[in-house]
Image 1: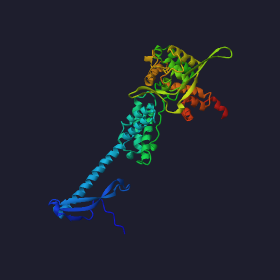
Image 2: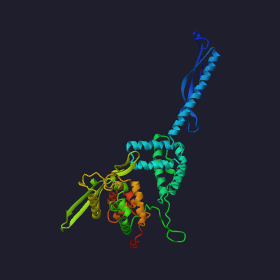
Image 3: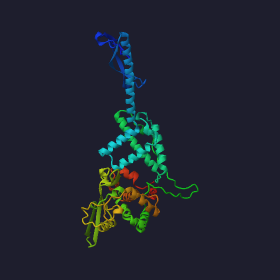
Image 4: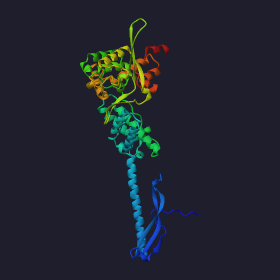
Length: 441
């Protein structure tokens, strides 16, 4: 029959040895073995630590009895020391497994490896700032419950919506925070710290319904950005005439940016990143002898502001975002006119931006800051009577217009979407139910 395992902290049998030559203070030596706790393993049912390895304990004294007492004191001190060391290590582990600490490590690693684009990294940094104003950031991953995540996201939604221009600005901030939390808790699952992510059961983030009218039945004035609406044909004409007559738009070089954006359908960062080398202009003569003008624009980069580097042009997030877009003749003529004004000699090799920083229009260099450009554009959209519009709305209007004439796969390729679901769900404007349905019902 096997001998039972000794309990942690209990000295086993002691062996006393007399050393007459050691002097009076250390004449007697007492040795024994004691088992420690294994602070790395616990019983999930009781919470008790598992038994660990055995260590040698030694005590000296002028007599046997005093040597035994010295050994017992050494055993007690060793248990206290091991407990304090385990407590310190546990505190370090707890700190390292807090939501804030794990998120910071993951974002730093993603930035160094290039896994995330600069714009995505900046968005996640903002989301981490939102999380830091909640109690969730200081919680250890193993202690977080779905209700904690839901509470934090609800707080972020309410806090971000207070100063947001967009009607669903708070919702967008909360969704970005949730995406960051998915990364954090996914890392926790991969490391074996937790079994499942609490984000999964934290509920959905619902977009608030837009107010369609006031209590007295009159139409409500909606002054927030509307991310679900596309420009109609008449609204496109209104906007084009408004920016064409605006001296401010001319001074800040906004007019051509808007007119080109309606046809190119690119994101604001992509349009600001277009170089002359990305533009193709083909002059020819038709069969009837009439001069023709065709062209295209290659969207292969975007611009972002990076800390310590300023405004940087870099590759887009996905390969699907790299595409060549044929543009209508009016936009080709617009680009040709800008090339002539900028003194472009060889359009195929000129690396300067097409839509340069307005402060450096004379030299034609310097990338535009897309945030400052978006703020300037909002003033022009307000002046045109379209306060709900953003530059991304021009992209949505172009995608919606093409969806009436082209297959959805071709429209997704034009928009630079890897999945047609993104095009269908987020970019094609909803319209009223057609009267044609009555024929089939």
